[in-house]
Image (cartoon, rainbow, N blue to C red):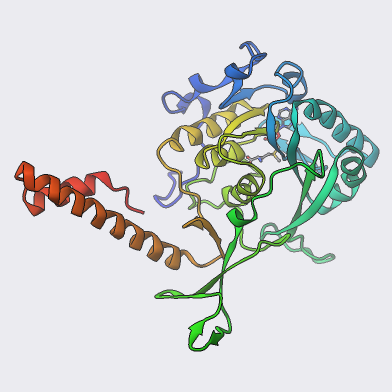
Amino acid sequence: MAKSKRNKTIDFSLEDAPAGVLESIKDEHDNLSQLDSIINQTINGDSFKIMQEIPDNFVDLALIDPPYNINKQYDGMNFKKMTDNDYQEYTQKWINLVKPKLKNNASLYVFADWTTSIVIAPILEKNFVIKNRITWQREKGRGSLSNWKNGMEDVWFLVNDKNDYTFNVDAVKLRRRVIAPYRKNGKAKDWEATASGNFRDTMPSNFWDDISIPYWSMPENTGHPTQKPEKLLAKIILASSNKGDIVFDPFAGAGSSLVTAKKLNRHYVGIEQSRLYTAWGAYRLLKATNDKSIQGYTDGVFWERNTLAAQQAIARKKNAKAKKVDSDKAKSTNAKDGLNDEQNSKKINRNINLF
Ligand SMILES: C[S@@+](CC[C@H](N)C(=O)[O-])C[C@H]1O[C@@H](n2cnc3c(N)ncnc32)[C@H](O)[C@@H]1O
């Protein structure tokens, strides 16, 4: 059945992969032992094997989203729920391989649902310094008649060295609507009035309720069954790495962390066992060369849900301002070249990427 025009889901088959996608993927037959040959690449293969081949000591930030301890199909790979003991061993096994890849001042974020989380917590604590446990409030899945519906996931924030790690708090402020706008001497206190409402930039907490899971009308959405949102990964990448740092993801899925890293001017290395998911990720990476937008992250801040109109208004204002600056510049140049206003405006529109 043909997809509706608004359905942006990336779900092409390997046979129908767009030009350049499959060629951009590395695998176990490539030379993986030099950083130069794996940087900004996704490697298709078994992480437990590939991690033994890539160099040590290059990772600034590791994003680890392994299969949770539940039954799940990943493109033909059947992950079966294990005993708690076995899942702890599985966790220790990837930690043993990831640890040597980390720089001393690196951070790690590990994703888990609550049942998996209580099993891995002691293993994480044994191997790293736990800095925080973030709750991501997400809406997905069916309700239950005999239990509370699961509406959250855990994101563990871990570091190697408690005295040496990156944390850019100003890069991850949350722009919230002001419910009771307070004025002092007639002036807004710590908030800004805009045409779309009153907003305040607030300090980020460990409860994240501003992020939806990707859905069919979002350009980032793929056919991957457990894809993470770019907005969620952007918070982590902006807080815990700097431009030019290297982000590593050994369970890369449809490439969400790699794409977000690229959009935020970080380097990346990813590993994923499914060639299909790797191809979807590779396609997103190619698109990210020209499109750096991250839904929900506009004007250098994260926005609450349901504020798209306000975000678009800001983007329009910025574009108009950029257009005016360009126009003024062009007018003075064109005056010399003899171009009229209409020719000038056409030239500017070609140069500006509208929101
Ligand atoms: C929870 S998903 C990660 C999703 C990813 N964060 C995203 O946003 O697309 C886990 C991924 O790990 C992959 N995987 C599982 N075992 C693996 C292994 N041994 N080596 C490489 N990838 C593996 C699965 O195919 C799946 O895509």
